[in-house]
Length: 356
Image (cartoon, rainbow, N blue to C red; front, side, top):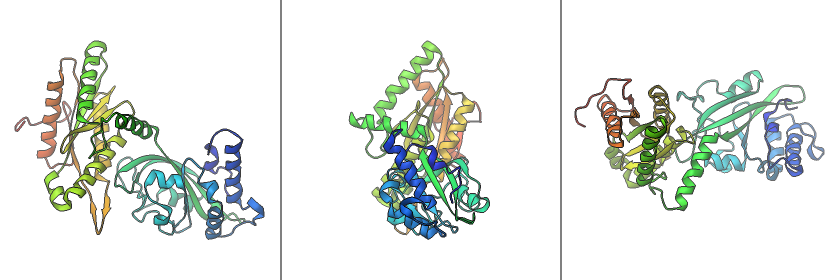
C-alpha cells in the first residue's frame, strides 16, 4: 500500500475538473496496485513498471515526480521533472538520485546527498516530509524547489521505496516570466539571458525616485564573477558563456519576484532589491553567493564552476544613483581584495576605498 498522506494527491494535476480528478485517482490506483486489475506490487521494480506502463498519465502531472528504490535508484522520471531539471528520463533512470543529477543543497548551501536527505530520511523512518531545497539543473545553475516526499510500502507495510514531487518556487516562475516578457521586446542580454543594462539602469532610476518621493526602501548588489579572465583561458569562449549563464541564473533564482537583475558589464551583474534594509540585503546577498558557489556544469571530463564577489548597499534618501553605485562598488572592492567569494555590505562591514 501507499501511505494515506501521499502528498502527490494534494496538488491538481491538470485542473480542478473531472479530467484532473481522474488523473489523480488513476495515479493513486497505479501506486496502490489497483489500476487495471493489477495485484499488489511487492517490489519497487514492479511499482516502477506499473508507473512506466501508465507513463501518459504520470506525465500529465504538473509537478516533477520521481520514484526511488531503497538504494535511492531512480525508477521513474516524468516529463515535468525533465522540464524543471533539464535531465531526460533516459539520463537519470537507473542512476542514484545523488549521482550528479539533483544533488540537493539546503538554503545554506550544504549538500544533502552525502547524509540523510529528505528521501533518505523517509526511506529510513517512513515519515512523509516537506522541504525547500536547491536542486541542480543540467545547465549548472541551482533552482529553489518545494519538495514533498512520501514512502511507498508493500502489502506487509514494509517500505520499498519513496516518491518525491517537486515544483519551482513561485518567485522563480515569476522572474522567468518577466525575463520572457523582456525577451519579447528584445531587451535581453543574449549571453547571460538576463535583462540588458539599459533596463537595469532605467529601473534603478525609478527606484531612486520612488525612495525620494515615497520613502520606499531598496538596495543594490554589484555581483562580480571571480577570476573572469582565468575562466575564459581555462574553458574557452563557449565555457565562459556557460559560466556567465549559469551564474546569472543562480542570481536570478536567488531573488524575489519584485526584484530586478541584469548584466551590468562583462563580468558583473547588478541586482536591485526592493523593500529592504542593509541587514536584509546581507541575507539576500549571501544567498546569491551560496547559490553560485554550489553550482556547476559538467563539461566533458571537467566541471565548470565559478564564484562571485558581492558589494551591496542599501539606498539612503540622500543618495543619487551615482553615489549609491559608488558605495556598492567600494564594498565589491573589499570583497575582491579580501579573498573573493564573499559579501561586503555598506555600513555593516569595514570597507576599503582605495582603488575605486
